[in-house]
Length: 305
Length: 237
Image 1: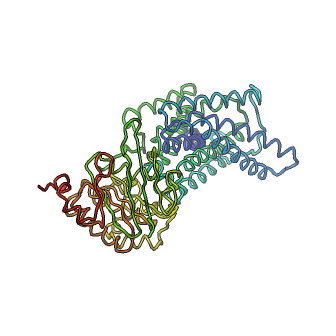
Image 2: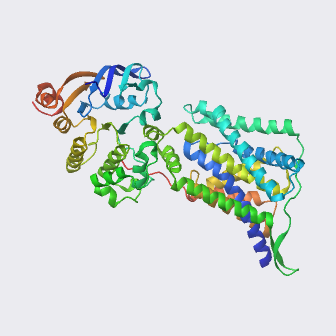
C-alpha cells in the first residue's frame, strides 16, 4: 500500500470535510429550529464566493497590497453581506409561511435557490470566474518519490473551520443566546411565553448559517480559484447529505457528517475510482439511513408524559 | 385597591368553536385565586390567551394597567407574568440548571443568581440533579422544575395550569405545600385546577368555569360548601 497516497488523501479529505461541515451547519441549525430544509443554503454559499472574489479585487485595486490584510478584510465583508442575504431571505421568503403547511417554505426555498442562481448568472455572467491564488506553497513530508503535502491553504481551511466550529459550539452550548436557540428549537410557544423573541432567534440562526457558508465560500474560492453560478447546487447537496448523515438538527452531527463525507470521498477517489466518488458518498448516506434513520448523532426525541 | 390583573368580557375562539364566552376574572395583589372546572371547560385556554395563544376575539386582559391583548407573546412574558403550563413543558434535552436559567428575566440569569439559590432552597431535589437533563426527571420533579423556572423571573403574578395533573397524591401534597410557601412570600397566584378539593382549600377565592363561562364565584370555603360544586367536582352528594 502506498502510505503517502493514504496520507495525502486523508489531508485532502479533512479539508473537504471541513468545508462540508461548515455548510452543513446552516442546514442542520435551520432544520433544528423550524423543521425546514433550506434548499437555498447552497446558493448562499455560491453568492459568498462571488462576493469574496469581487471584494478581493476591489481591495487590491484600492491599493491594499498586504495579502493577509486583504484576506481578513474580504472575509469580514463577505460574512457581513452574506449574513444580510440570509436575514433577508428568511424575512421575505420563509417568515410569511411560518404557520402554513410544511411543504410551502420548502417550495419557497427552491424558488429562492433559482432566483439566486439566475441573479448571479445575469449580473456576473454565466462563465466560470477565477481568482488568482494568493497563498502558495506547502509543507512536504517524505522524499521526492513518495511524498504527501499539506498546502498552506489547506491548513488555513482546517484551522479556520476548527475555530469557527469551536466558537459556534461554545455559543450554542454555553451562552444565554445558545440556550434561547435550544429552547426555541424544543418548544417555540413555551420559549416565547418565557419572554424569548422567537422570531428574532429564528432569523439569527439563518444569519449564523449564512456566515458559516460565507467562511466556506471564501476559503474554497481562495483554494480552488474558480467557480460559477451553479457551484452552490452540488456543494449544497453534499453538505445537506453531511447534515443528514450526522443526524439533522445536531450540531456535532453536522461536523462529523462533513468529515466522514469528505474523507470517504477522497479515500475512494484516491484508491478506487474518481468518477464514482459521489456514488460512494451517497451510498454511505443510504446505508446510514437504513440502519440508523435519525443519523449518526441524531437522537429520536423521547418525551416523558 | 386596584386590581393587579383583570379579565373583562373575554371571548376566545378556536376557528368556529367558541371556547370562552364573556369571561370576567379579577385578581388583587397578594391574592391566591383559583379557577376550577371540568376537562374542556376552557381553563387552559384562558391562561394561554393571556399570552395571545390564541389571540382573544373580544374583550380585554389587563395586567398592571397594561392591555395584554395588543402585545406579542414574548412581550407578555417579560411583563412579570410567569406560567407553569399544562404538561409542564420543560426543555427535556437541557439540564435542570439551564431550564431554570431560561426562566430568569430576559432568559439571561446566570449560575450566581440569588433567585436560583432560592429556587434550589424550595426544591432541594432540583439542586441534587442540577446537571442532569430535564427529560430524565420523574413527572413530579418536572413539575417542580416548571414551577422553579416560573419563579426565576420573580413574577408579580404566577399562573399555574393543573400542577397536580398525573401526579401521585403524596407528590401533589408536597407541591401544594411548596405553593403555600411561595404564596407566603407575597407572590400573587392564579391556579387553574381540576382537583377542586386541593385548589379550593389552598385559595382565598375561586371561580367555577363551565363550558367556557364563569358560573359561580366566591371564597374558597363558600365554594367548598356549595352543594353544586360538591356534586360536580368533589364527588360529594
